[in-house]
Length: 150
Image (cartoon, rainbow, N blue to C red; front, side):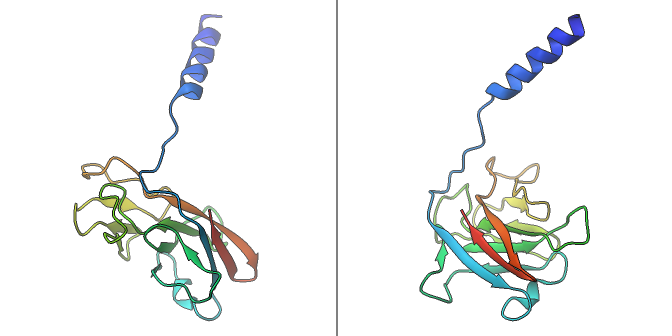
């Protein structure tokens, strides 16, 4: 009985904790990806690509642009993650994180490093920032085609 009450208490505390709110202002995101053509450089695992200009009139790239990362998943399927390029510590659309080939992105101004390969965008331990990158949804629209939205 005592264990059950402790477990219920833990659930209540966890349910009442504040959600992580991004410091990056909300802005529209709609961007199509085609891994067979224009975005074939995203095919290898840990590949990353930054988008700061749209390719069509319908493209919307968030606050600071969009970073797309071919991350890791538990199966063989292509798993893409998308984030806003703006550093959540700087909150400036002109200060953009720079992806590397190891599934991370670094802010050139504050030096914070964010883990992008798992879809979390959380800052590494000892980073200046305590906020994750603003993440966006990546939906499959067909064979090797995707759309990034918020």
